[in-house]
Every structure is written in structure tokens, then in C-alpha cells.
Image (cartoon, rainbow, N blue to C red; front, side, top):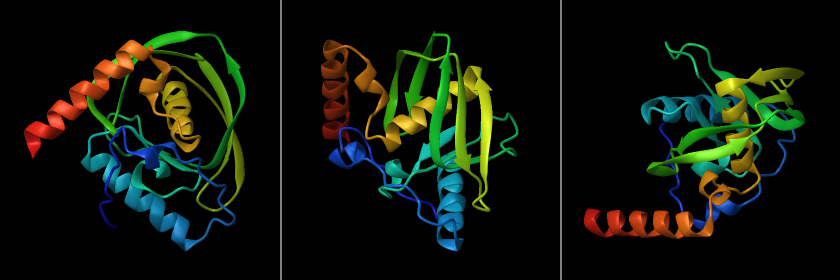
Length: 167
């Protein structure tokens, strides 16, 4: 396994729409393992392939306390959304930034597992939020783009200032 480089907003590659995975093979399984290791190292709960500059529809998530329950979503698509909730979100591609985003409270998602088998999952609470957040990445959207233009401008200024200080 290998640690992958996580792209940071406003990197334009984060706006690339991911292509469907044609076949779930060892390359995709290795990508999933590397993404999972990268996510754990960065102390995240979800990671989309877009965030590591791989533009295929692959997501890994682990919301468990013990970090022992990874979930894999290959070619995920949301079939149904129910309810609305507003929760604070953060993102490994936008480090140190947290804000409230409104999303569906519950979702039904269809995806492929590591064996290439299709499955459906009903998710609520944190898992539903995480699935929606990561699928946004696959669609070329970062969570801050759900915020007002003023908040987006403030976040960009903050990130650019931080980048200048780290040079």
C-alpha cells in the first residue's frame, strides 16, 4: 500500500468529473487500499478518488470508531434522497475549514463492491452525509461550493494566506 497525495482546494483538478470504472480488477482494489491508507493517515472518514487525482468513480468511507469497518463504493449513484438536515462538514481537500451544509438526511445508494458485485445500501445520519459529500467530489464539486459566495471568498483568502505563510 502507498500513501497518496491529497489535492487541496482550489486546485482545478478537484473539479474534474470522474469517469465510471469499467472493470473492478486488482488495479481498482489497490487504489481502494491506497485510498483507505491515505484517508486513515489524514484522519478522515471518507475519500474520493478525485481527491487523489484519480478521476474514476471510487469512494472509500470508514465512520467507525475503531477504524475497522471500511466501506467501498465503486461507481456509486444515489437512487433516493429523503429529508433534510444541516450538519457541519469538513474535507481533507480543504484542511482546517468547517461549515454547515444542507443535505438529504437519508439516501439509498447503489454501487459495486471490491468483487465488482452490485449492491444497494440505505444510509442515514453521518454515513448518508459522507456518501453525498464524496459523490460530490466525483461530480467535480467541493463542499465549500454549497456555501454562499461570500463564505467561499473568505475561505479562499484564508487558504491563500495559509499557503503564503507555509512557503
